[in-house]
Amino acid sequence: MSRIVYVNGEYQPEDQAQVSIFDRGFLMADGVYEVTTVIDGKLIDFDGHFARLERSLGELGIRNPMARDTWLEVHRELQARNGLEHGLIYLQVTRGAPGDRDFVFPDPETTEPTVVLFTQSNPALVDSPKARKGIKVITIDDLRWGRRDIKTVQLLYPSMGKMMALKAGADDAWMVQDGCVTEGTSNNAYIIKNGRIITRALSNDILHGITRAAVLRFAREAQMPVEERSFTLEEARSADEAFMTSASAFVMPVVAIDGVALGDGTPGPLATRLREIYIEESRKAAI
Image (cartoon, rainbow, N blue to C red):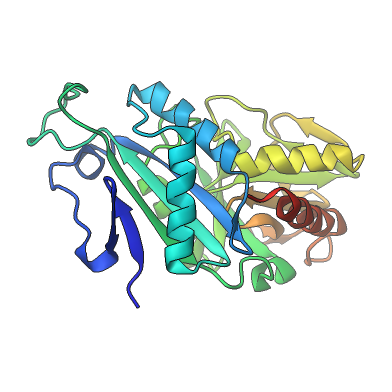
């Protein structure tokens, strides 16, 4: 059965959906996206994703084409039409298709934003084999542009980073700038040393993760000490534990960095407990 997707106000079978070849998301990576998790058929942290979407659009000067409640209605309709129990809903908003290619932004009065949403099913989202085993990461230079706080569709270098990791026999890559870890290719990065959770502070250097905000809140509520500061590559390699967070992975333990095992090379107790707490609390708050 073909998925039902949403394109510019219409629900369509995925094999019938079309976007203009002149769309600026295609030609210029001129757009933003969000990914909202679905657990048990319900949306996780929807309002956080909506708030970040508004911020990203505002930073690029793209008009938000829908109000909060309309976005929510579309998410719920896609979930229902596709029978999505566990997985993700991806949304993308671009500056639109002005009818030709030009570096200059089109007139927003005459060019409507392009809106696309689709679902991705993942039955193993909660009970993830990778989370039980932990993942291995390599480190690479952070060569992205300077506004990583905007969730744009400019994802070529993160894709290259993931391919570098696979080629090296690892699962993912953490990026390094001036000797310090910024974040992963599609996730925020953390280490744990002497019981303290350490992660880079918010700035233009990293994405302001919605899962990151929830996990840090839950950690503090559980009386786990948190330090929001830069940490060096050397600190990461000598950490007791490490993990990453994202909407698609929740809390994912990291068991090795650049071939150096952390602890005994298995998921550590704090990262494992944080994953449990995140899933428990997210299920309670899902809508």
